[in-house]
Length: 365
Image (cartoon, rainbow, N blue to C red):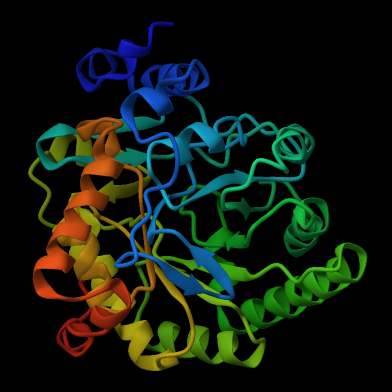
């Protein structure tokens, strides 16, 4: 594959899942260095230490793109400060029937109902083992197989398998595309899940000699009471942070009603307000110390900075890259750096500046 095939227009002419696979192939062929600086973008204004990890910049590639840990290093070469691979389940699974990805082009949004399609722990583990000495921050997003008899045990297996190679873990319990998975966010189920996950983390630390931070990824379709018990559970189990948020089931105010009627989780620009409101409400609950990663609708430097002002320590994106192409990460990072320089600020100094405004907004229906 020619590297120029990763440019936006040729891929947009392809069916979405085929375009995704083509972009992975192009990155394997070296497109990361063609479209980015060849390494994570660095700036004193953008660096942050979160959960004990020094991040060169706060912009990460969200889980869902590199499900099988095939291209973390080419993604870092685009300028990202960190990359999250997965969601990975213990056993390989095909996911839901195709087609299962849908573009809402006018709104720069995506609906997917992939269903944790991935090659399983063993395949991802082999790849991460090969790159373990290359440096760079690579988190591992872990999940449960659809037909698992003990889903919490699947998360424990993920911790045990990837502890030597993960910069951090994300427990994904908020995908809407695995039936019953979001039930793990309920108060009773969440307490058991976090208790067992953190115990697995401690056991793995006994083998590896390092404690890997654990984040929990939550849904944007939560009510105030849900946020209350998640915040309490995070404190009780000494969780290292939260990722806010996954895709939404809401279809409010979409222009493309036909595509919007497809089942699955919605991501992209329309998710920004909902996810940022939930983020700020969670920051209000957990206080200033607990790390939060803001995801949902990040599409330019201003939206990335606004997530941080609303309470995020780090931000992630994925969906808008489908429309903006592989130069988006470095464009956002350079824009963030310029804006902060003009204001005499850093990402650390602006955090929470608009949190109270966002937190005061009602949760969308």
